[in-house]
Image 1 (cartoon, rainbow, N blue to C red):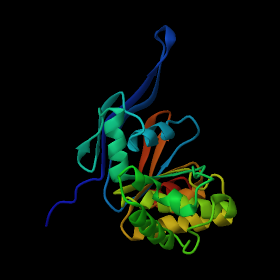
Image 2: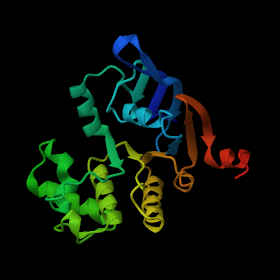
Image 3: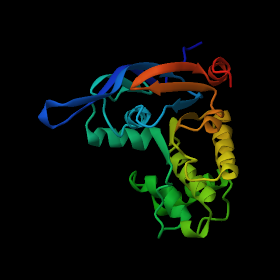
Image 4: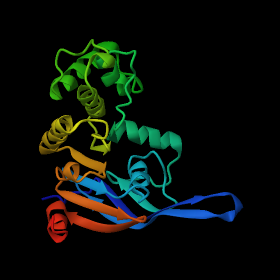
Length: 240
């Protein structure tokens, strides 16, 4: 049987910001971990811990100062912006806290937006958008505007958009931050369902109840990896 290859492999990752006057700030310090296909991982940490910087690097929105990052077996540590954009389009789906929808375009147009950059024709874009909306429970909403649906539905649109390129991994950055608790649960249950179907999910959150949907947890503290293991074990050790 062939050995399962990691979808994410981070080794000795560091990120330092250099400022005027020779000053510098180390935001990430020698972080290493591996994530395999089908995992559901929560990256946690207080504000300023470095978790968002780590997410930006994992999502190919930024590059590390040193160390290596391999995504689906490809070293993306030192790629330029254009090359990183290609990687994002082929392998990554993003879900953000603020939905990032185009308010004057239909829901179907928003979902199919990533396909425009791949040169996919109008008819196929529409067909694939309809399929993705059905997957997130929004069948029949294709021609509405984002302003005509609730915040929870808008986040479902964002998830459908993230799925449309059949990415190997979805990165979700505080995806429930603008939602009430009931809607947050609905969105997280959708992520759990997608994960059950084999999609790898990496979630950045500071909320314990959101992190509970993930089986594994990586905790970042002052730019360093403070914990990497089962979420349930961490809670037990903390007396939760």
